Length: 196
Ligand code: ITT
Image (cartoon, rainbow, N blue to C red):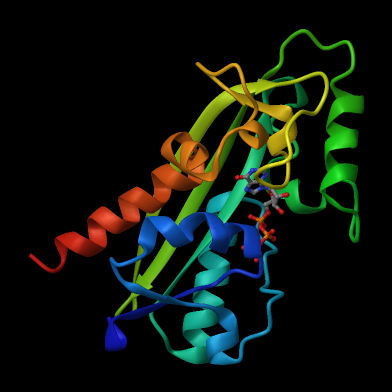
């Protein structure tokens, strides 16, 4: 790693907040502001994996630093995997998380199959080589949003085995079971194994 620092290539402060404590003390993580890179990274791929790769490659090719990015989608079985790769802009460009959740709930009205999952892919570029790590959280879509923690679709997503939505869990509880927590732990395991 260059100077032991990795750049987290994301414009989403919620993602940074969540991964911070998982990476703290293990290796130094910088943000796009540290390399003067704009926050709006290109993501035009039709897949989650492709978008994660595209964001990391953009930063590596333009700034030449070791970096990782992640892309996440909420995949709802009854909606044939939607919003999926369109999770950030499901209700349209410029719409917010509330609009996205409202649209999901409208499309799911009267639907008995509430199965859904969050799917995350982290793309790491280290010394010019690319590595992928994934995480999946299975659950169901609630009929009514609940909770104020987390971000995005968290108030309507109830992970399997829990009575609460992601938005009702603490950051630590969510990290223990979430798609992002799983992918980040794989990243950490890989990075720490390089030092032994
Ligand atoms: P970057 O691409 O800059 O990292 P982004 O917000 O555009 O940030 P994504 O393309 O991965 O990120 O979009 C995923 C969207 O899915 C995100 O904007 C949220 O609305 C939602 N999302 C991602 N992770 C989530 C989580 O843990 N809980 C709830 N919703 C989440």
